Amino acid sequence: MSKLYKMSLEELWQIFPIFLVEHNIEWKNWYEEEKKNMKKDIKIAGFTTCYFKF
Image (cartoon, rainbow, N blue to C red):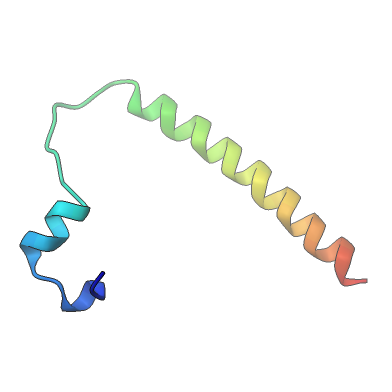
């Protein structure tokens, strides 16, 4: 596979397609759920890193 910066827009769009769709009211809920999960994962990863560091 080529390096991304060397690829044409057409090649990039094949790998990373963009779809324009109508707004979905559920996206806000999905975002909040994902944010909550990421914060939990970051807290766990941070604790694990500190734990093994000492």
